Length: 314
Image (cartoon, rainbow, N blue to C red):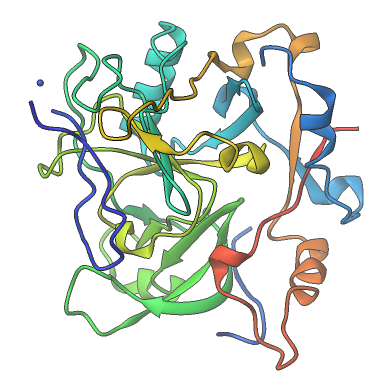
């Protein structure tokens, strides 16, 4: 049996899983199980903005992961990785993920889960998924830019891509102007593996993702454009780093934490939902927020060191 696991070595390009500075902001846009109160209150941002500068996270695309440490809420992006989002929703609604352990957790890297065997060799009975490492971004998918990076970390292409936020997700993208020359009127983009991002584990076969996934505890740019990102944490960042570190079968005495219950918000009665709002990244308030992030030289920090503000809906 081949394990699906993620390499923590920065120069590595393999994330294996089981098989049997811009100084000015540019905006490219056409436009739980019961969670302890402390776990909710701790994430409320001190950043204030008018109510119309916040957007509601669609309950159909909001995943609750309840743990002994509190709740993690993940926004799903079907427009970026439709096959993977559908798989996560299907398995969640089958209660497949309930009580599954975080079998491989590496400090500063990621929390891996989704294996029914709990040792890195298991998957669901559903067929493996085709890779969705990159996506095509049209004019309706506006990105607020905060910097640049290599257009593709896995190729010899020396071109640069803009980096910024699509909704609350950190992405790298070709300039919108290049859409003029493409047949579909869109440009290439990919999500970045910053803290809080959720991505699918796989074997060396790019098309081998199934049920195992990981939540980033830190940034891992060597994974970008090589693993399918399907979501981003919008609540419970402190829970990500509370998950117990260790690897099942490798660390003696390691008793892993688990996902007690995983649910889609839309499947819960309205009164049981935790309604989360994210600051609109095409709003004047977000531009104001970005200015507070600049360093003494007027530059933005690395995009993975920035977090889009979120709040509980008043």
